[in-house]
Length: 207
Image (cartoon, rainbow, N blue to C red; front, side):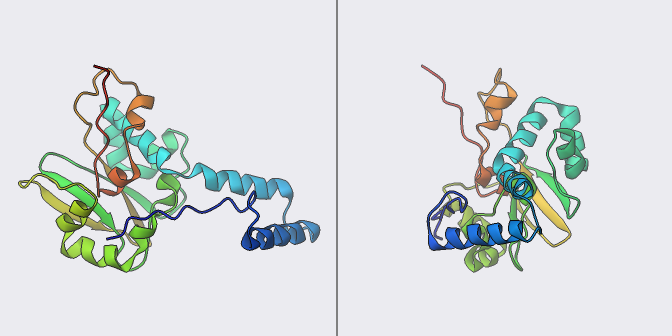
């Protein structure tokens, strides 16, 4: 499975033909009074704020606060709002916890439903037909291609996102992270770990 990441260029600062058309359309909408420049800037800022860093923030807090962890697992949206993260009015956000016995993997078999407010834009591979079809049939093989495979005794639970429910994985806290603060812990949490095709980074300690 290809994991190539195609980064999108910021259309407001780029000089591509597409970016030029976007800017021309924005100028026309502003001229016609449909939107204001401030409204456009606010929307750009909002889109930029949606990233895996939001999910990592939720995980780091859950790793350090058992009460928050319980709230996160019982109601993802409310827990996100508690940390100042706009989880959106709908659909629902369900957080599933990895344990030594269960490893969770997220997919959307019909299209590409994804918790954008807490994870940002879905990667291209998540939207691909190959991932959507194989994640259910052979999840271990898929994870192996990402460089990870759960222990042989662990059960793999595949969760299929829908228009009404989006999922995020709460990965296990890596060993050797005692004494790390929330910011440091969040830096270990990758987007792949939040989807379930990987696990958090292992901290590098100075020798």
